[in-house]
Image (cartoon, rainbow, N blue to C red; front, side, top):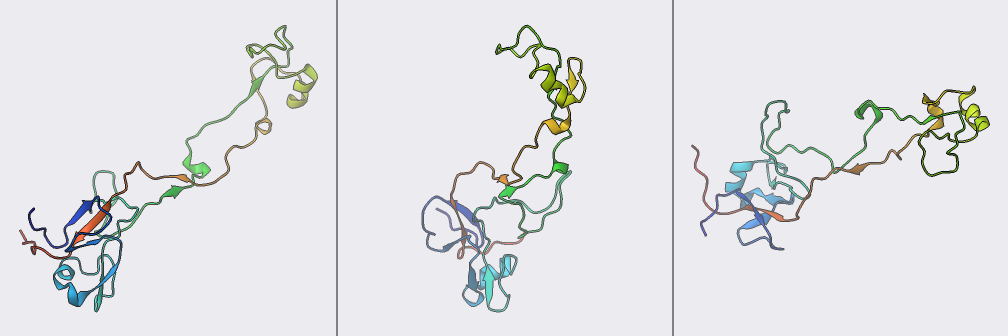
Amino acid sequence: MSEPFIAEIKIFAGNFAPRGYAFCNGQLLPIAQNTALFSLIGVTYGGDGRTTMGLPNLQGRAAMHPGNGPGLGAYRLGERGGASTATLTATELPSHSHQLRGSSAETEEEGTADPTNASLGTVAATAALYGTPASPGVAMSGASLPSAGQGGAHNNVQPYQVLNFVIALTGIYPPRP
């Protein structure tokens, strides 16, 4: 196996960081013992820049390339974003409506499982909902249907397989182009 570049990140399926690597878990390292790595990543991922430097934290995160593309925002190296859950507000939902249609006319089909051309109840009950008798297919009051949903967050995580990301602490210093 070839020697890695310092600061090279790899995916590792083991439950330990191999010799010369550290987990990408946001830990702080002393600069004095990692001068080559510090010269490459600085304090992009944390640390005070005098005595400590931070490693990238890829725990529960997807890696993403810096920059931007057509229709996308600009992202800087080391920037964090996104959320594992999201709560949609009414303004984020597409425009739509919920309607219950009914008829004030009683049919011969009352008492059957087939709702075609059937009423929701008796003429008296239907008239109470409408206020006045209505013809078939008239939309009922919006108050006749309750709001739906609890307003809670839903899972917003893409499908995943849990693996470890490790960063090379030692190896070949990468040459500039």
